Amino acid sequence: MSVRKMTLLAMMMALAVALGYAESFIPSFWVPGTKPGLANMVILLCLVKFGFFEALFVNLGRVLLVGALSGTVFQMGFYMSAAGALLSLLVMWVGIRYLKKLTLYGVSLLGALAHDAGQLLVGWAFLGNPGVFYYFPYMALVSLATGFFVAFVVTRLEKTGILKKILSEEKPNVKPAKP
Amino acid sequence: MTVKEFFRLHSFDLLAVLSVLVLSGSALVYYALPKNEDLIASVFVEKVLLVTYDLSKETTERTIEIEGKYTPMTLGIKKNAIAVLESGCKSQYCVHQGYVSAANHLIVCSYNEVYIALTGKEPVNSVVAGITVL
Image 1 (tube, each protein chain N blue to C red):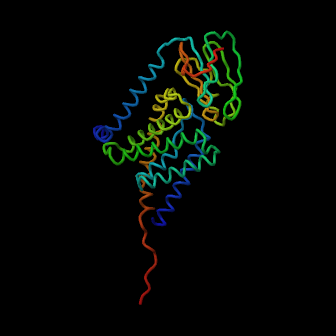
Image 2 (tube, rainbow over the protein chains, first blue to last red; image 1 turned 90 degrees about the vertical axis):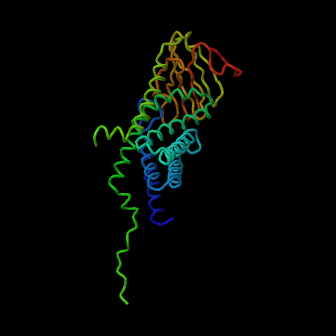
Image 3 (spheres, rainbow over the protein chains, first blue to last red; image 1 turned 180 degrees about the vertical axis):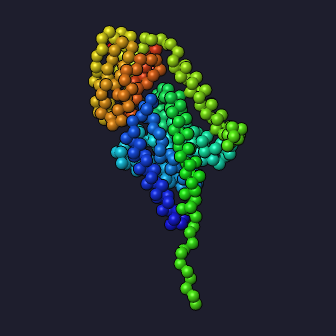
């Protein structure tokens, strides 16, 4: 792994942590616990630009650091967040790799739905009541909006070509010494 | 981009959106259908049934104190409705949910690992020993 790539991944993780932590101060709208999923923009971008393992690294780091910052590590909310993040990443990766007819909008929507499902599965495991899935239709409708928003931002960022520019190896601006 | 191009590019995205709308909409319509209004609230702490209340028999509004996993919680009970009035959790999602008064609805406090399940005639997990109907 090049230093450039490592630095970029570290920056992406920092951005994902900042967005994830900032999001914890945004009150839920309509359904308890629903959030815009701002950090998912970074994860989707990472998945598109780098690949599954790099996105997994950023995602796991993000979940752990946001949990540590908000003091919820190894509590139910932490496991819900981790399960949602991992399932979402897995589904988005499958979407990008195998469901070629979907654009980033469809992939982002599937990711948002998988995030909800992952959270509710852990809620079911902790509480022992499948009734938590009662929330799923509400969360799915909210996911339409959040999934669209995430995909919109990522598509726009991609169009600017800023990451491509950063990722491209620049030649050193040093002229070789004449013999 | 023309409309035709848009639909060609996003046909599968739109199919996914449509599926979500239809399935979620159907579930919400099902939720909204009138059901048995005589409700029973079952309060669980860490998966264990703590207490059940026959809400149809409540005549006046009252409050009840329960111990969550980490902090005490105050529940409000009135005829066919129940709410979490106070909880020590950070998010306060359970408190903001207010009074809930429909069967199959759930109030969850993930921090305290408490959930309150509202059901029709029969309480959920009725096989759990030690059910107290007040």
